[in-house]
Length: 413
Image (tube, rainbow, N blue to C red; front, side, top):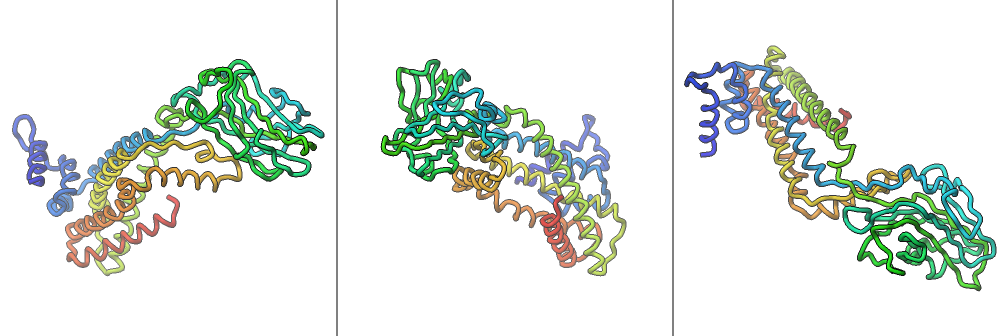
């Protein structure tokens, strides 16, 4: 029934307003779709009246479908953007105040420096940064995280006690939110800790003097030891920023990302088309068959890749069923030397959010089905284009397509 309905649609499309049949040479559009639902009839006609216009139209439609699929993908992804950029808060101590001696330090994670404070024979060391922002951390549309690297050094390697805190000031230093660092910083002296504290209402911060999450204007790090543990103390801060999640669609990177994706899609289509046609010719020679004119086989084989349109459409549909993902800065733009950590975090986020969903797992098996479909259409194309027996056409098509998959896997194209 479905097949008959499609035939009816394409019959109507092939008749002009005067009821006259349109020239069959102009019906390559019809043949593109007939390849998908009636390949025997389609390739029988294509072999007689092959035209490069058909495959080129398939390429154009594939690029358009790719654009739609990438738009759907981009709508599912948000990236954390840091404020400030370029790590400017920890490139110079000129912005900071402390109870110790401040200095720029080349012991850093990002940028050129970290900010350092040293206090001799003391039980407490603090560093604060004021007159920033204001930062709105009051909801999902504002800043959602506060990230930093912190290192402490105690002369006797004694960890700070529970009075290790981070404070976010709200307009005045006596109005602040307080976050405990005692269980989060490393227990070993002279080691960097990488921390991100969720900010905003309901995130476990202690409020002092009614601060406002919509108006964060400063911050302070404070580490304290017991009186019996007084010693020379050092604290270093680096990679300090507020994080705001921005949808990929709303970012300035989307246009470039889309253009790159479309270029990659077009290139991949053309490369697969050329390679498959070339490998078919090679395999035909191996089997001792007549290759015939290159252009004929090239044009006919191009119609095989009409399956790409179905693959792209189904893949886009599956992506649309998946939940949105948010990638922190350290996942999509890790610090130098932490690329493997960033990749592991990226994969973990995908696995945690999509790993158990059938739509995501189906995307893994989808290519195998379309590889088989493509090789089957290649068999039909060879049967009609070169009049090979079905078994011989199938053997040539499968062998050529397996070589195509192998080449695509080892050659970065």
